[in-house]
Length: 241
Picture 1: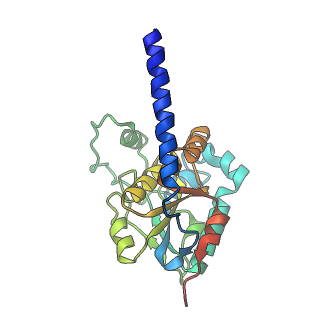
Picture 2 (picture 1 turned 90 degrees about the vertical axis):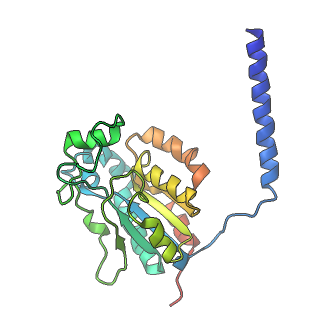
C-alpha cells in the first residue's frame, strides 16, 4: 500500500510538473485572433429540426425548460440574422434516413442508430425531420442547406469540408443539437480539419444539461473557444461591400 501511495504521489507530481512546463511554453506562442473576417467565417447550425424544436417533436419536452430559461431558440435566430447582415456564411446541417433505414447496420451494438431505428425517427420528409421555420433563409439570404446525413458529425458525408475550403473559410462557429452528441462531434471534426472553432454556448442545448455544462467548461476548450453569441458577433468584421 505504501508503494502505491508513493507511486500516486510521484505521478501527481509528474503531472503537475508537465502542466507547469506546458504553461511556460505557451507564453511564447502566438495568440489566437481577436477579430474575424466575415468572408472567412461561417456558422454551422446542427439539427434545428422539429424533433427538437417543435412542440409536437419527440424530444421537445426535454428541451422546453432550457428554451424557457435561456430563450435559446430566439437568441439563435437573432444571432443568425446579425451574422447574415455582416456577411457571414450560414450552413444548415440536418439528420435524416431513408424510410427503411437501409443505409444503417442494424447489428451495430452502438446505441445511437439503434435508437433511431427503434423509434422510427428522422425519416427524410417526415414532420419530425422538418426544419425550424424561423431559421429558414429569406429570398436574399445565401445560406446553404446540406443533404441529410447519417453520421454524428456535421462533416460526415455532407461535403461540408470541401465547401468551406472552396469558399476560403478559416473560422467556424457551431451551435445546435446536441451539446453532448452531434454538436460536439462537429466541433471535434472541425478542429481536426484545421479550422479555428468557436462553440456558441448560448446557441446549443444538450440532452444532459449538467454534463453539457461540464463539457463546455472542460473538454470543449481543448478544441474550441467557448463563447457567447454577442461576444462572438463583436469579433466579426463586416464583409467589404
